[in-house]
Every structure is written in structure tokens, then in C-alpha cells.
Image 1 (cartoon, rainbow, N blue to C red):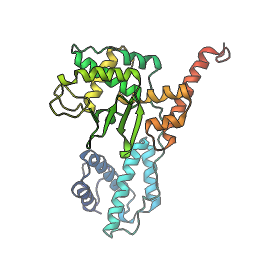
Image 2 (image 1 turned 180 degrees about the vertical axis):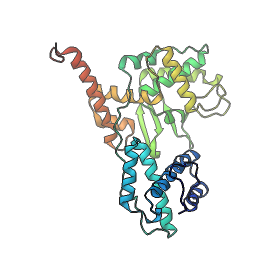
Image 3 (image 1 turned 120 degrees about the vertical axis):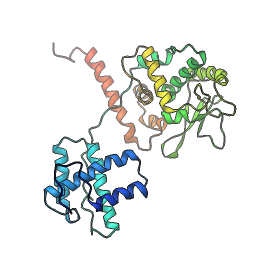
Image 4 (image 1 turned 90 degrees about the vertical axis):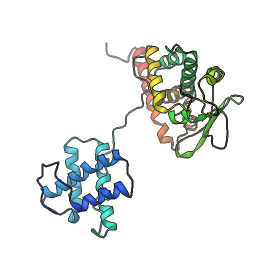
Length: 316
């Protein structure tokens, strides 16, 4: 490889690496955002090889482990390291197909496990306050729509994508719909897996109120249950903006996003029922380990009760 200054981030990529980047852009059609992350990672790999005075095609697993350790020493997070390793692994896999290397030295190297962060859920009283809050909009139609959205997000635990994909009625192209007579929401979740969840009384009443006024917004023939003021299907970003404004109007002390209401739904269900399997089914989780994180939220809730109520909870 042509020697390059180690600290020159603006130096061109080695032609063999540049061809890989072009392959990702043209043939693999990677998103611009992904390419923007991969290229600096590949440039860093090139610089590591230059610093160690070794050709990248001759690098062995112990070289890659040492370079990965340097990423950790720099304080990179597990996600950033994972992206960097994906770029490196992809380069060697591409070179292997081109018969430029005989093995992939990145195989077997894994990024550090990310620290498990607990999902943020609203306390019961805040979730209820949000569900019962009145929108600041002067439009009665908007108020009805926003109220129905909150009731379904919190009352059914729907993902934002599942909610905006709901249609007014079932049909061949419908991804989801609500059967008010059966009090059931039918949605298409992750992995194109269908599931049905019960819809509570408050959500059904909010749905009836919204449906009675929906025609004032919806364009003729628009199948979406939730529409914007332009008459077309409401988008996820539009929903997030409306929900944030509604939370502020309700006086909640934190920013609220749709998935926070899903977390609240799961956490409050588990606190009341203790039935982890049922919560898993309602959320549509393929693996119960995904649902188990809510048991930690439940323990936090119990720990707060203990700290506040038990005479031996705190040193006096």
C-alpha cells in the first residue's frame, strides 16, 4: 500500500478499499448514512496498518484484536465499535471473494456488549393524565384524533408503525385494522407477524368519537384510520410531534415519544398481573428475554415502594 501520513484524515483511501466502498454504494446500494459511517472506519483501519507497518491484506486476527482494543481505549461505545467491525469485516469478505486474501481476520472478533438500558416508562398517574388530557388545538377534529392516538398507544401497546398503518376497515391490502364490535386491534408487527390485542373501553369510545369526525379531514377513498389535515395517512414523525405537544400541554415533566407509551403499557400490565407470558404475547415479542426487561422496571417500582414505606428501608 502507498504510505500515507498516519494523522491525515483527508488522505485518499487505498484503491483496493475505495473499490469496496464503491461496491457498497453501487452494487449493495447501502444508505448514504451507512456509507458515511463505514468510510471513516475503513480509513481508520488503513491508518492502523500504516502505523504498524503492515499491509492490510497480510493482517492477522491478533492485529485486528489489537486495533479493536485501541477503539476501546479511545472510549468508543459498543455501538460505534460494532459499526467499525462491520465495516472491517465487510472489507475482508469482499477481498476474499476477489481472491485478494485467504481468510477474514475479523471473524470471531465481537464488540463489547452494550450496557443494558432500561426502557423509560411513565408512572401510572402520568400515563392516565396524558390519556385524559385535552389537546390545545382549537380544532375539535384534531382533539378527537390526538386523544384516540394516545388511548391506542397506551391502551393497546402498539408500535408507532403499527398504529399509523391501521386502516379504517379490513381489506386485501390492509396491514391492520380495529374491529370495534369485537374490541380487538389486528396489527402487522415486526417480522411481518400478525397479532391481535384487546382494545379497552376508553379507547373504543375515543375511536368512535374520532371516526365520527374523520371525514372532515380524510380525502375520498383514503383507507388510513389516522389522517393528517391534508387528508392523507398520518406519518410517524407527525404523530411524534403531536404526542410531544400533547404531553407538554398535560404538564408532564418529560418528553414523551410513542414507544414510551408502549413501555408504560407493558410495565403497568406486568405490575398488575405478573404474567410475563401474557405481556409477551400482547407486545408481539418473539423472544421472552425481550419482555423480561420489564421485570426490572417492575422491581424498580417495588423498590421505590419499599424505600418510601418500610421503616428499615433507610438508615435513620
